[in-house]
Length: 313
Ligand code: UD1
Image (tube, rainbow, N blue to C red; front, side, top):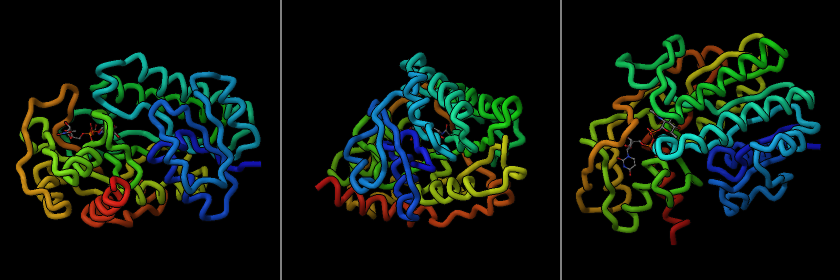
C-alpha cells in the first residue's frame, strides 16, 4: 500500500517529487488528470502506482487517499495568464480540487498534506524580499486560487487536526517542465525557442525580475516538509526559493551563451496580471525545515538547457 500520494504526478513538479521518493525506496501513488500533465513524464516512474483521475471529483480523491500517510499536493492549473483567460477553470482545478482532496485526506486518516503554494499570493507589493509575515495581496485569479488553498489547509489543521504545510514556490524551473504551451514558464519557453534558433518574446522591458528556483531545491524542501516535526511546521506557510533574483534581460543573455542563440529578443506589451519584481526571503524555511538551496540559478539553468537539448532532438 502506498504511503505517499503525489497529485499532479505527470506534471513537472509532481513527477520530480515522485522520482525522488521512489529513489529512496518509498511506496508511492501518483494521480493526474492529464489536463496539463504529460504521459511522457511518467517514464522512469514505473514503480509508482498510478491513478488517472480528476481531483474535482470527490470520489476520485477518496480513492487516491486510501491508506496514504503523506500527500504532496502539486496538481494545479499553474499559470497566471491562463487564469486571466479562464478564471473558472483555475478555480475548479485549484480550489475545488484542493478542498475535495483535503476532505478525502481527513476521511482516510492521512497524517500530513504538503501543498504547492505560490509566490504570486504576494502580488505587486513594493517590499522586497517577500516574507511570510507580509499581508497577501493576490492580483490574478491564479494567485487568489492558490491563496484560497492555503487558507483551506490551515482551516483543516485548526478544525480537524490534519497536519498541513504550505510551501510557497517561487518560479520553479528545470527538466520536465513543459515548454510547448504559451502558458508555460518563461524559462522553459526560452530554452525551447532559443535551442531551436527561434526568437523568444519578452513581455515588457525585460527588467522584471524573478527568484527562479531550480526544481531540485523544491524537491528537497518537500522532503524536508514531510519529515519536519508537526509542532514546528503544521499550519505554517513558507517561501521556497533561492533568495536572489535576476531580470529577464539578464536571463536572455545567459541563455544566449548556453544555447548558442545569436539573435535579439522581441519585445511585446507587458502581460496583464504580471508582477514586476519577485524575490523571496527564505529565512523561515531555513529555520523550520533546515532548507538551503542546493543548486544555484546558473547551474540549474545549465542543467535545464542540457536536458532540453537531449529531449528536443
Ligand atoms: C507566476 C508566479 C509563480 C507561479 C507561476 C505559475 C509570480 C511572481 N510568480 O509566475 O509563483 O508558480 O506563476 O505559472 O507571480 N514572459 C515573457 N515571455 C514569455 C513568457 C513569459 O517575457 O514568453 C514573462 C512574463 O510576462 C513574466 C515572466 O516572464 O514577467 C515570468 O513569467 P512566467 O514564467 O509565466 O511566471 P510568473 O507569471 O512570474
